[in-house]
Length: 124
Image 1 (tube, rainbow, N blue to C red):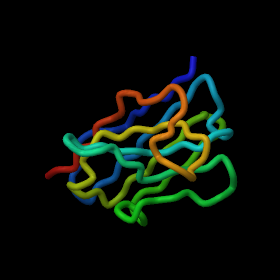
Image 2: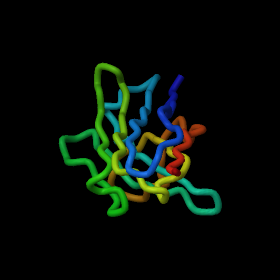
Image 3: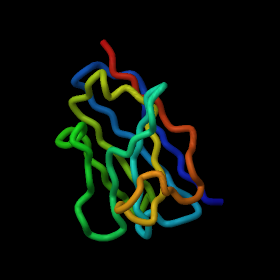
């Protein structure tokens, strides 16, 4: 069964760090683009980072560039998101999704679609 499961969220103080995991099953993450998305209640889900199946550099939204790092561990079939220098405005539910490529509309996700995500709360 094709699955993506996000984990690693929690409560962290401003300036702190978290590492989120996106564990895949039923497909190989090396063969697809994986995007990270986040959503705040009342707002649209936004893609802020994406890692391609090619050797191209990962992409980041300006809001997270320099603070977040996306990576892929082939052996674990898992995509990670290292978040540092966290800010209260980073508070959101974080999701990962399988994409054909990192180019194009961010809402064109592949199976399994959206999961439950993992909550990240940045607050003192």
